[in-house]
Length: 193
Ligand code: GAR
Image (tube, rainbow, N blue to C red; front, side, top):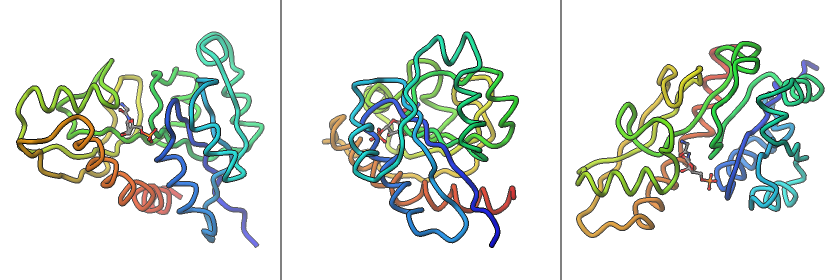
């Protein structure tokens, strides 16, 4: 039997996308979520991963930016692909270079609008509402050295309604994310492999 492709999910917060991805691939024939890398010891994603029996690798800034601890752990887990799901730190060059074209991210807006440093989660929805946009959506893209600048793989659009709040817009965007992110990851890996 051939080995499954091994994914590591990186997450910083609630982890609802991480959980959705784990559930999607739970009985997949060729792709397996191996581990979740988490940079915040208080993040709700930790509990979510525990309930799904996914091991956690907890790390801090020093381990990510000043030495090779995170890269070494990726090697130890024999990780093939990295999936960012609500992960807020810029990925350092040692990991970008070792996983060139093998790191994917989801952003809760239609890049190139509303991207860049500081643009994450509800900050993005606030900016979209403040700008009175008629549409928002999601962007799934490969990750390079800059925030939200890698090759775009997929976008999906949804309306922004006049009565929307950050909560209602965030809810609509999360539904789009749950629907598309696992399928895009699956197709992207199939094309790359
Ligand atoms: C998601 O909406 C994701 O697109 C966004 O954070 C949220 C995490 O939610 N990511 C970014 O803003 C990255 N710049 P979750 O923790 O419930 O999956």
